[in-house]
Image (cartoon, rainbow, N blue to C red; front, side, top):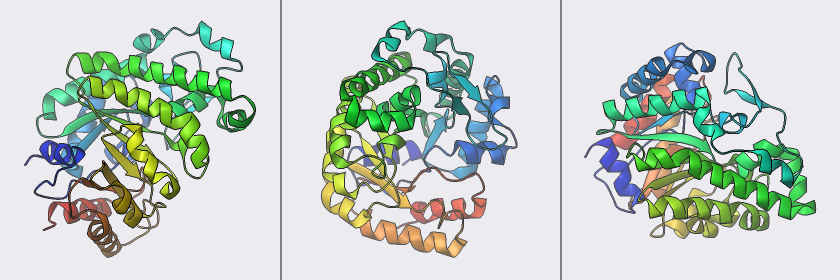
Length: 341
């Protein structure tokens, strides 16, 4: 089976002929390894495409992620400033809204005109044309709750879940509509059949299970109701320890939920197997960055033995990897899955 076929079978709950394997995003690592910068790629479709196709062969993961690290531009399209850094993903400067009424001034068509977003879209299309028969080629974004928090400011958003819940609902609903608008033309023309998003502000370390159920879950479901209606898969990563809300994960409607390394992977297998595909959860810092090649091999085998031998599972790090992870560790990470028997 090709990488693409392998991971899609897992997304459908099946058991491929090997363990599916992918990093999550890996934009920072890829840009550093390719010897370029986020700023340099931001207006160079050809170079971004070259990086994505070159790194696909170098990493040998089942998924290639266009736009990893550029998620903040989806908010910046509505007037926010972005600061490029020497290393790391670009930061959004300042919040964009204070009151519900501020949303009324925003035109979703602004997304279609933003030059950096269009660079990513064009690189996605070119990459899909070149390697899409072999690999899943996706485009990343923040999830609804996280994107909404980018508009408001994370600290203000956390307080508002208690003091201004109607405001939070309006903001996250707007963010969901924004994401559907962003992806719709790429789904309609057949470029995308898998969408990848990260919802780190919906983290188990930031909001309670009750807050997740109230403010994050309904909008993830709204988005995946749309993707399912279009025949599109979704891969969603949520940071932090989500062991206490694993029962809620099938309600997100995601094709696959990517779990943080803090989450109990044995419990995830117990709760999720047979209900949805799940991925995880090798420690991206303690193992992938700081560990030896042998440490990586041991950790991968432990995760696979615990959670991944019965299908419906993807070997992944517990989050995006730091840009300085040794290449040899990634090689071993992928090799363990590809050679598992």
